[in-house]
Image (cartoon, rainbow, N blue to C red):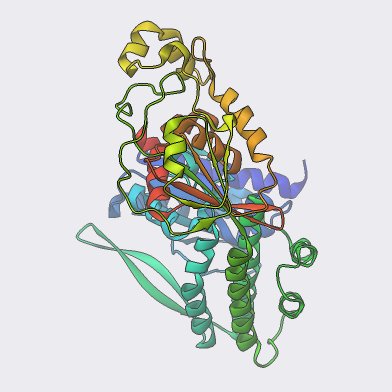
Length: 476
């Protein structure tokens, strides 16, 4: 094992030791460059995400003290300064002889709020395994990234650039007033080199965030790969990409940035957001919606064996005009789609609800009494077939066949709850064993946008927040 690898393992061991004896920690995860790098270049910013059940001053001080007590000699870096950075935001303490533990401590509500406000950051964090307790995805999952997340970040990013032009960077820190937790906004003075550094990072993360939406991949690309991705896909105009490449080269060389660099960064960002909005307008829209309610949606299992009509439509239907409308063979799907504007209707048996077989019409308690083996299988993470019926994977297999359509036109798909869960599984990063938790109300659903053969999900904010709660460990 190389010397650097030994040091990294010793640092991880000390971090684990620091969090192990603090009972209120629900989750501790090391994320970012320290984990991703081969060497020890990430030691000047070791990002550690800690979630506690109740964040008090005593708990906060205990966590900080635990890291303060780590000695540089214990991690094989004699002569290095150990620094604990417990702020939030881009504030760094870079130097050759620093080991920086960047502690980001949240209570449950704080983490939930962070997921809602900063989904890109939290999405990247979910890639890493916890060193203690639950994974971040188990606590409150991001579920998906969508174009609206980028569009809504525009104001915050431009205000960051304004800060940088004024020679400061904003960050947040905790204060406690009689044990009441306060989050305080503060500013740090920048030199000219850091102005360029932050400008580059903002641009770099914007490009990677859009790519994550398009590809549905966690991983951030390095500069050369990122540049190639955008060139190959012809997403941004060449002038913008060339500026980003220059920004990277300036950063690499160090020294003072050229005049007007920050103004050019603003132009780059405005061009970027303009392109994002065009992506949405140029995409093909496919809407997946659950049928309207029927009188048999009463808590009993309703699959394909009973075929009730819908009750009257209870909410306003979109005015959007779809070129093609797909529906299942069941009345509740066929009747619902007639309330939407479509140029052409296509019936498809692949969109039918799951076949519950002998469980059709039973309540959940009756299922427990009559078919306890099914419940036992679910608890063991298995996917049993309903007696004389289908399993969820059977539904998934036929849905994959349906989703292999080219979808070259704006399309509407009116289908059923289990089918919608399988479509979400196909497009999103959701554990199969947790799909049963997802509830989608009647006449609600989500959109998929197709752009350059990439498929991007878009879930209404309220629905997505509810979905996050449903998939959270809080809902177990």
